[in-house]
Image (cartoon, rainbow, N blue to C red; front, side):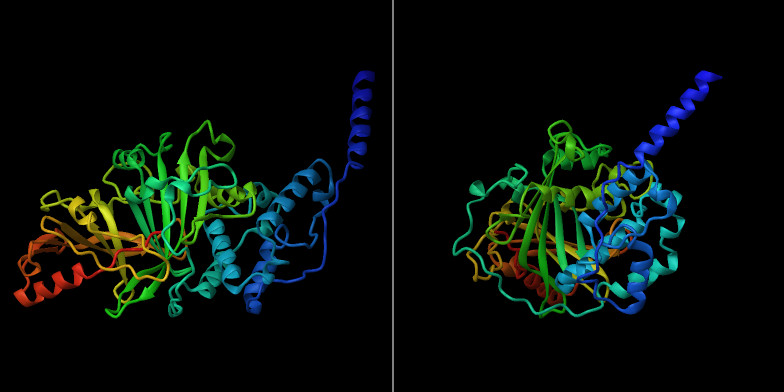
Length: 449
């Protein structure tokens, strides 16, 4: 009993001494709060300020070490990623972008942290509050901004000479030749994104070997601004950036097994100020750690157990088609907002040889002049909401596939269209078919640096 008493006394003394090991949690008055309507600010203040602000909101049991140390770490980490006390100093687009990311973190269950919610149940955002945030953000509800020509070098950059990212991840100039993994229409920031994969990634997507993705898999996520065309459709406009994800479980074990990089603008300058930019990447992708930190649902026929891992619907092109365009390279993308459809223009090797997308800044990308033997395919899908990202839409079931087999004379080009639930071949009047041929062949490729 004496030994037990001594142990209890020693433990009590140690516990008391621990209370003096109390590094500070800096506090302050908000200098530039989020600019939003009162109801939205109420939701953010109530549900997020405990960690994501300069205010100090500790409950009594948060004050007790060692719990205090854990809470302090969570608060400082949260502020580094997003601080609503200073967010208002950023441009309005950046403020809304932070809210979009917050919504996605909440709906995917990554925020607030499950351990934090267990002791602070009031921090959990209610479904009504989440719905109110989504209604406020309202993607696709505002007209597209006027497109302005972005500045860039007078000649296309040398892809082989692009500077590595600050964390040492090298740029991969071969990304332009990679195949489509998927695509997104982003209503949160009015951009299109192609997600391309190298041969390792494409083979993994086709076979379903993506849990985890194999070493050597590489993704390129390429973004363009959107612009309204004279045909009433949304087309890609200015090139924005290319992001790379490189899978190497050992080399990048400190960053979830992936090397991350982002290069901006036509001069492809590295993103961020230093190597700490990678914390943004890993933090953003944390909610999809169950999918090996990949947001994209690959367009694939692979049958996998579980939900929302691959996009089987979009891959449902019948083997009876004269060509399989999903194995070709991408030329451009179109969206019909009124009908909620996405169309991707693919081309075979002969068609790709006519595509020139790297032109000096200030010069428009011209439609290709396809030669005899070129085949292009315009695949149109219905859209659905991206289950991994609020504010994005992805391809769903195919609605039509159009092929143009280019002949030496455009008038002699062959046109085929496959429509309906089973994508059976349909017939158009000669005049209508001719109009479709001329329009498809007139589509300009999406620009690359």
